[in-house]
Image 1 (cartoon, helix red, strand yellow):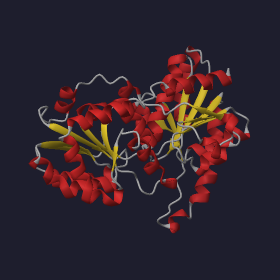
Image 2 (cartoon, one colour; image 1 turned 30 degrees about the vertical axis):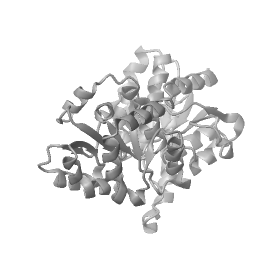
Image 3 (cartoon, helix red, strand yellow; image 1 turned 135 degrees about the vertical axis):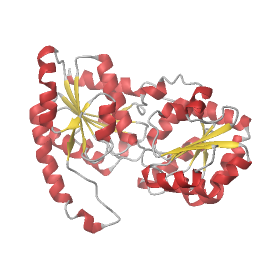
Length: 383
């Protein structure tokens, strides 16, 4: 369960006496599913190799990791830290105080837990944990999922034990001798997905005989995608199509309102069992973050990407273009989504030959063992 470190110590007191713990590892980070789900995949891989490993997650209080990590069966401790707010500078007044406080919290967590290694998966809660681990010369590892590294990871990379990356060319961000190319870990529910299309569509209460579009904007939603679907949702019924629409919390109420009475649409802010969405969708609409791409490659889906236009160095557009150039996906700019997205999706839904081409080509890019490679390397370097 989430909570304070004292809660964690109390709940694990008996377990520590009975079970022999081989290694202790902290996994830090979160904020979005793109950080949390790979972190859980790495934790699962570590436990699969060595069941005696004890894992403690550290996340940011109030963020989604405080809910998702316990659901996966792991303990998590929250620290009080937040990100820099670019839209309202006045909201950053307390940020230095939170950062200082988080370092004291991290100091206590590491002092009490005594980890053999610390793994950072991105998100602002990972920075103070890895920075303190480095100051104490504790082996520390970074997983950088994107093709453009974040500023925190670039700073941390100088003293990291090893840096796991998804693709080549990362020497411009990190010391070359510390890099290991592994790909991005994909959650086991998608790697081992056995859900049939018919079963998945019935899960959403839809018609297995109709072509189905699955729109996912990630754990926090995607404004450009949601607005494009909102503008063109009536066109779906006219083309005998149905929609599974994962909106994220900000757009959930609006989506429920406009979908009221529409039997061809299922909508919710979040889908816990993502494998059902992938199995149900004949065509997928998605952002093109690194983790979304990794999962869609494994799922072998015909995808229309709408890159998030404000990603650092516009890396989501670069990610999507990489697949478009391999005839493995289609792409619509976020600024053009309202005018072009629905027409593109409707056309692709009626073109099974193109769907099959995209599905086969994206499937060839799948990496299915990144979590195992990362876990093995961590254990090798701390043994």
